[in-house]
Length: 334
Image (tube, rainbow, N blue to C red):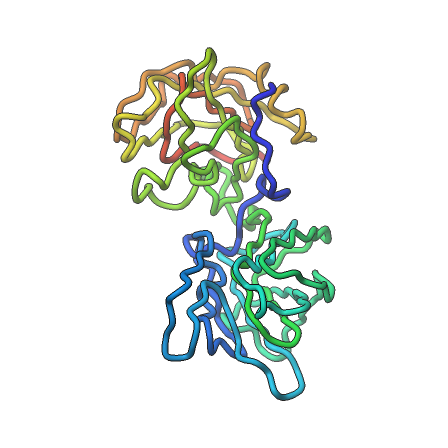
């Protein structure tokens, strides 16, 4: 298994809960004079345009407050796309050099309000931490609490390019009917991509994102394979369950869709991310090898093997290519 993709981002196997396509919003800031607060959670990587200025000064791709001349500090509030457990954050100061904050902290709370009321019980999840310019700051959070909002504090002012909030959406499963047929892999139901052997052209996290893909870049796509073998990706369901139907969507992939695909699955109780790829080779077959078509939704029912309740799947594509979405419809198991 030497071709597993190793990421610099230690939280790559978790979902970014602060992404707009999940409904995340920056709902409040004390100041965003130089750069709009909405850019803080832009899904695109930040860019620098040397000769771009606006009415307030140098245009920067991020959130930037003016130089503070009074006591205090600036902050902004982010409403996450869905309530979830946070495992880590990336405070990214890319392209901010002489204008980044020397330090930052993060608080979190749970609230039904868009902007939490003054009485909200904010809990510090990242203590006051020193920052460097033009750098990623990956910080681990390990309290297991479920949150809906974050408050990013910067001391005393300055600019942050991006804030990524990595974790897992936590639906209230007790409210679901056990007979209800739902997409158990959907990101909004807590599903997530864990690891893949290659994602050169498109992220594995697009596979279970909401809605259909909007273009060829909004899917998982591997490089052209020039050696024997096939490409693969492993995903965790939001809840264990029995699968009734599977949809493999190759939207926008025409000259580069996989020729065939298969799915293996298992019920894993204590997954070890470092060895799960090797373990998955021995998982049961859920969907035998099937032929795929370009730019099409393909539903499979009769081909599905009865293997009981599962919570992890391995999508194998032959030999390489791009898949827009993968849906796994079934009923939760208690």
